[in-house]
Amino acid sequence: MTSVLYDVPGPKAQRRNLILAVVTVVVVVALIAFVVWRLSLTNQFSAAKWNVFTYTLVWESIGQMLLNTLRAFALAAVLSLALGFLLAIGRLSDHAWVRVPATVLTEAFRAVPVLVMMMILYYGMPTLGVKVDPYWAVVIALMVYNGSVLAEALRAGVESLPKGQKEAGFAIGLRKSGVMMLILLPQAVRAMLPVIVAQLVVAMKDTALGFIITYQELLYYAKLLSSQPGRPILQSALVIGGIYIVMCLILSGIARWLEIRTRRSPKLKGATPLAIDDPRVHDGTVTEVIAMQRGGEKPGAGGTSL
Amino acid sequence: MDVIFGNLDLWSEGITYTLLVFFFGGIIALVLGIIVGAMRVSPVPIARAVGTVYVNLVRNTPLTLVFFFFVFGYSALALPTLSNTILGIMAIGVYTATYVAETLRAGINTVPVGQAEAARAIGLPFGQVMSQIVLPQAFRSVVPPMMSVFIALLKNTTVAAGFSIAVLPQLQSTISNSHDRPGSPMAVLLWVAVIFIALVLLLTWLQRTLENRWRIAR
Image (tube, rainbow over all chains, first blue to last red; front, side):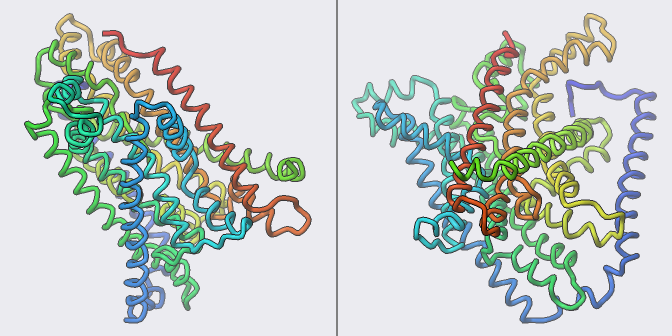
């Protein structure tokens, strides 16, 4: 591994690295040991605390709640993709009366925290005489927020394409809609696929916010379980948290796989919007590097959101 | 307007708590993030592995769950009791630190290896290679994405409302639970949204200003 920060270590540096390695291991092991010690002190590992998870009924409910989480995520993902395309095309429009509202909407939706949006739908709408189901509050809030972030990603993808693509499209006689649909968007989607999937991970994580507005999903059930005998709050958080983390890890894994594939794909040579880990940045000559960085200066440009 | 002027005490409390969580959460995130970021680019394989596991694990955990662990799980450790606010600040700091670490790592990776090689070729020692060549370039490319991380941190402070910390969205339940406070839930929440839009626009403007000031001239 070549790094800009250090050379291949010599004997002295090797000794220092060994010491650092030992210190890291000691600190991490000490931290874990401390937590385990405190937990065993308060009997968190006793059978009574884990007893709830021996019932089939509990696991059936967990399955039901998992389904609820996935139900909200799936619909929100599809809807936010649709909204993302709509807003992105709106922002790229030539007509000011389409572009301006789309821009304002995108910026406003992006600035309002997802939880506040959910609360507006769930607690606020009844003031206006509309009762919103927690499920729809979660789905709509996620759609609005992730849709606007995806719109930004798609727009950045379109704008990162070489100008010649658009000009060539017009030159062969396509209309504006044809250039957008047949030339620009397919390439933008390809280039932005890792970002899009990464944003879906965010949507998946944010379904957990539904717990705060009493949507019956996994975390809500974890809270519910903690009222069972033995008050197994940490245990249910661990079990249900594990489910969440595994789901998100799988999606993130897909995002990373797509990113590696995108980077290697020869079809996308013209449109690498961001080349953070790109090996070519390190291996090429300086002029190549400068030319590349002119193309995509910012690391992590586009829709950075947690 | 009664929503604002009838509850001025609550609004100032809400904004104070939001900014409190934002600033202290941000400080924890920065300190922890710099440590983890340094671990992730270090020449020590074990430190790199620990950093990678931490970042991947926490980044794939919903923030609500991190809060859940800190606020509800902390009591299981039987350590001195801490208020929900402090636990919430720790939760948001631990969560955001992973994003800070990743931003730093990406920023360092944008500096071409040739820069450090050239610096060594003209005879600069390690300290000067870092302070004169590598870190200034990394810093410039890190500023805009780092501001995005802090904008996200600001928006994430709202999650604390679900754990009875008196940040802005918590106003809604406080006001609708008391009988003599003016304002409907909708009005309160819309004002909360307006405040967040204003704060985010402010940070975005700051981001753009800094980006223009510190852009790398090549």
